[in-house]
Amino acid sequence: MLEEEEKGESQDENKPDAEKAVKVNGLNIPKIDLVERVKSVDKRLLFFLLVLFVLAFGTRAHLLKYDLLFGFDSYYHARMAGTLIETGVVPEIDPMSYYFMEGGVPAPKNQFLWHFSAAIYNVTTLGRGYDKELWIQYVKWLPALFGALTAVGMFFLGKEMYGKKAGYVMAMVAAIIPSFVYRTLAGFFEEDCLGFLWFVIGMVFFVRAVKIPVFNRRGQCGSFRPFLRNYGDYLGDVPACSACARPLLCVCNDAYLHQDGSAENV
Image: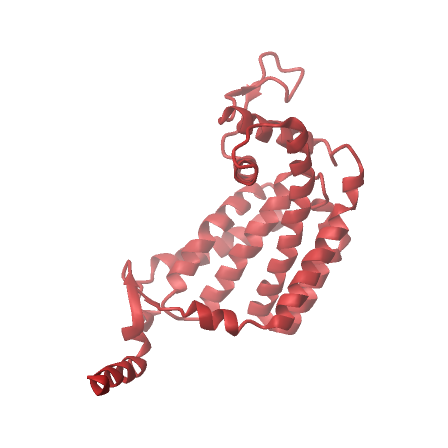
């Protein structure tokens, strides 16, 4: 019996990757050994990313010493997200956006920043309900947090595009370059602070999908499409950004729609 079990185990080890995979929606997903993955993590890289995150967050968080928010639009987004937390819905009509418009103006319903920030508040406070003073602290901290995470994401984007050394450089530049720090300062609660994060994450998926012609190309392209579409639409008024985002979306759509899920046809 023992010999048969050992024989069976050796046969499992010698199985090709395709046989060890799990089929999901027509795609062969290989099994991942999480324990081995954790053991193989580069400790020096983790230390670098931790230092990078602290540097990026600290560079943006110096405005926390001020009581007021940064910029005018931050108050608008903070008020609307706060209303979402308090009532659970975005109001149909916003009477406070433009004082010269009698009766108010329709409020947008698709502001992902409001819904995502409200979800973070509700989860981290364990659903304690709306507290204005506490929410103001969230509004101050969240942009700096999103900016620091974007800097970390830039490492992975640079690594996928040009290698680790480029990833280090791109991450450090994103952490401290004034033009980007300005848009993600503590209290600068606008779409930019969160939009950059989704865009960078989407670009990582996109680059991986284009570079590696394997089973998961379709899934990665599919993951990238909503990020690029949403951010591309948001930047549609900026010709240079729109010119970059929309062709990439077309390429991504083509890669997504013309794959049948098998590695042989990629």
